[in-house]
Image (cartoon, rainbow, N blue to C red):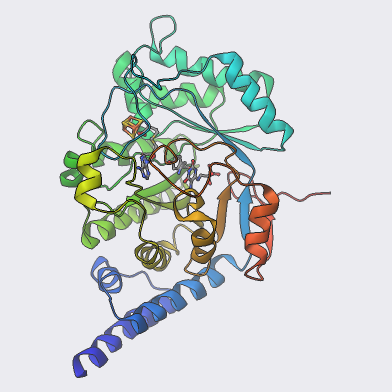
Length: 385
Ligand SMILES: C[S@@+](CC[C@H](N)C(=O)[O-])C[C@H]1O[C@@H](n2cnc3c(N)ncnc32)[C@H](O)[C@@H]1O
Ligand SMILES: Nc1c(NC[C@H](O)[C@H](O)[C@H](O)CO)[nH]c(=O)[nH]c1=O
Ligand SMILES: N[C@@H](Cc1ccc(O)cc1)C(=O)O
Ligand code: SF4
């Protein structure tokens, strides 16, 4: 009993420090993440919610966007991925320009402001013998017809793939994509920024240092990025906090060096195991993410990152809309995108759906008595006339 009282005092002292606007150390954040006592977790939630209120206000934003996954053919074999296929495997797909344009036109008709484009790493996807020309063609296909759309495309892993295939630098790839019309970069492929974890869950992927290098290069070149964490598989709480610390220092680098771009948001992507490849699914022993673990981590992420990364988004695809709505009371301030079609985690067995109407997202926010607001990809409010 005495021990628990002492423990609560330690938690209160850490939360007081956060309340005063100070950054927590990794050790302090880890203490918050390791709490099991419901009273302590309730206090962590309260602090995250009040910091969210102070840092970004009560308004909950959303973006009207469409995902386009141009191919699921991938040379890699990440142990969590149910999306990838070999080229000759059943279910492999590779969209042509006409199909991509049709999807884009449909999205524009539904008032989308953003196309979010990511895909598998397909060595056959080349034009004039180069990967870069293929990717530039993808971008130009969309941007020539719809120059007003914001193109949020290609993770650091995709950047490295193009650079490796063509023997050019990350900087050359990013500059060429930017010039042709890519407006921002999804911060996926971060998974857990710990090389021991990466060796097990994504051994063929870029390592931690390369992920950080590509994101920082993007910022230096004026390309904003998002940031993510794939949580709830084999990683420890300490590795989760170390991941957040790497994101925080990356953002500090962008801000303190006056780079023309930085991280716009943080999204937790809880691992969905149901249809994921069996070894990892069995090791994790859970088909769907743990909502309580994800909410606890959501609160700690707001407390640890909020001074530097102010926008936090839950994933309704992975948590269901009800879980994502709850996350808005644990530190999140954005309900995400309409997506229109989601394949990556839906193929892994996610239950949240593949598309949300604007009205449904608005109703979810309304249920909390908070105001909603449409935003651009870069979090500017869109005023409707
Ligand atoms: C499928 S990749 C697409 C882009 C590119 N192939 C790459 O790996 O960066 C996008 C992200 O989806 C997420 N993802 C994949 N499978 C998942 C799963 N089973 N549960 C949750 N997120 C998953 C991972 O974080 C991954 O980085
Ligand atoms: N949470 C998920 C997202 N979120 C990304 C947003 O839709 C949007 O692209 C971003 O906020 C930039 O504006 N996308 C997914 O495909 N799946 C998710 O689970
Ligand atoms: N988080 C990515 C988008 C994304 C998230 C999860 C996915 O499974 C796929 C894509 C972004 O930067 O916007
Ligand atoms: S996560 Fe990306 S790189 Fe890994 S197997 Fe899936 S599509 Fe390929």
